[in-house]
Length: 194
Image 1 (tube, rainbow, N blue to C red):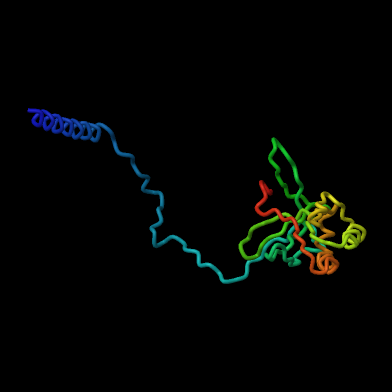
Image 2 (spheres, one colour; image 1 turned 180 degrees about the vertical axis):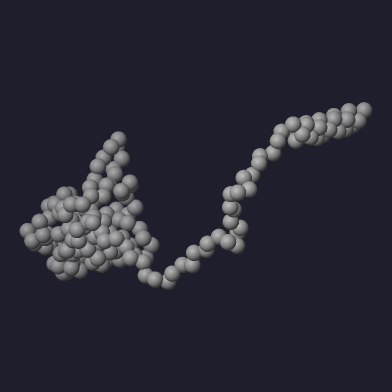
């Protein structure tokens, strides 16, 4: 009994839909197409063939720094120093953000040429040395300041007022350290670097 009622309901629904569609088609006029308007066929459309010429790009408006394009190796990875852009640190609601700026004394922005990852060089470094004379030499020659020290471990955390000077003199700093362990602070994928 239920099957007959369900079947009847389905047939009735289909008939109602067909009849309403037929009534709509008969009562409404189709849109008329303006026959004077020229419509291009697919074959008549223009196709653009790419040229194999070298593209020219606009010159960067940012000034070149002395370090632009220089390759440096930090934490076992190679980086290229970006042209004329640096980063500044801002904190809002406890979140540290870095914004691009165009000042010579900001933190340099580096790019890893292998994967395109950008990083900020803060100018801070951690050295593990046993001779305090080396530490005094670093502070005097390169304008570093002692941020934190762990004398019992022989480890010192140093910071630079201008990180660009550390990048310029990185080879000399490594020679001064004479094989001592040094780690340069690098922030990869910084938050909101614009």
